[in-house]
Amino acid sequence: MKAVVQRVKSTTLSVDGELISKIDKGLAVYLGVEKGDEDSFSDYLAKKIANMRIFEDENGKMNLSVLDIKGEILLISQFTLCADTSRGNRPGFDMAEKPDIAKKTYEEFGKKLEGWGVSVKYGVFGADMQIDQHNDGPVTIIIEKR
Image 1 (cartoon, rainbow, N blue to C red):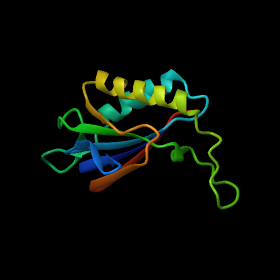
Image 2 (tube, rainbow, N blue to C red):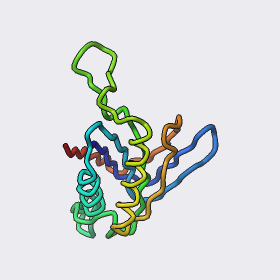
Image 3 (cartoon, helix red, strand yellow):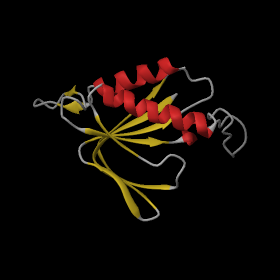
């Protein structure tokens, strides 16, 4: 399981020109679910993301979490994080989980984030999503659990 976590000032997500989700200050989290990912991986990533201190405190130090700032998370499924680029120029996606299992894992992961007290907005699993993101920093963290 892989997550790309980006600190944002705002993010909107649309499908076919229709606004689906919008957050202000918080995190855009792109989640890739791989074959063999265990439920414990979701637990680990949800705890890590909810509590990760990547927002600045009054002294300009990254010392606050999304929970501390009462921010939101926009959770976006992204199977392309599971790309194998070791051969040729066309990425392979054999490591990406089957869509039905990945969708269930994505939804459960969102519920685990909510369980930590974070307000979570969602993308549309499997859709062609257009994302407008105003990064803050930029601050981008990659988290993997195998």
